[in-house]
Image (cartoon, rainbow, N blue to C red):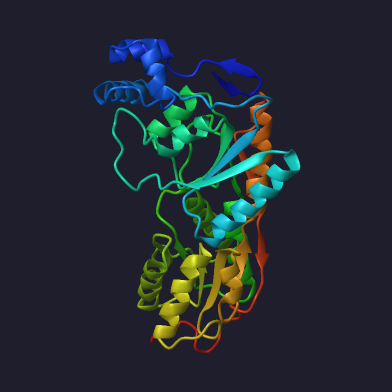
Length: 356
């Protein structure tokens, strides 16, 4: 049995079904589940394969008393400052709610999945340790993974998903359209009209929304939108630098660029330096995220602050209500962004947009 909110629901097959599938007795199947040694290797293999094939959930065992209330935070990596901000917000909210937080990393596209079942690893561990719900800070989940969570009635919330989640999935993100407007309005107010944008991958929630905000701000100011000023890259530094070089090689290069991630802005800085151009004298740069790296750059990066810690805390509070049997009024919650002005933007100078 898996608890979802305040109701108990049956999750997966019973041990008797597994035993019948493997052609063994229920006590023998139970020995395999509980890690007993007195089972023949071939029998253990048949039972283990049946457990995996049928999706049997090994229930956590407690020595008495009330089981601790756990929630999981699954992130794509533990090595980025963005993940650190998410962890900070989730940990504080979990502490305030009296919950235990378990953190793990899961690269959902690190290896091919079998079509008949999801990559089990960390999914099974959620139930093995008795987790009451999950926060995901991943680029996306696969269809089998969504199906696994639905099958086992595990409440979960997506933090800043890259792709549009399936209908009914609860997510928390930032007001990306407004962030794109704010970044572009700042550059317009400084006197820039030749403003480019270097965004993330095409057809992702954040990139599409930030570009839409950029275009809306240009239109509101009566500035012509130039399709050649819109460039896409992945989230890495090198690709962003290449896109910036393409912009510099245009017959009429931009005087300012809105870079849709601070990490990508590092690559833009490097590309400008390689061309002998200076920020902001020759090119104003606005980033997005307000990660610690934004303050470390020289000059410090003007950027749109995305409230990652607050997004994680809000997600935890939503998850807590879902664990108690309540559904949010809306499946999508967006938190506001704000511009953080530093030294990487200035009015267009005499060398702006020059070629290196």
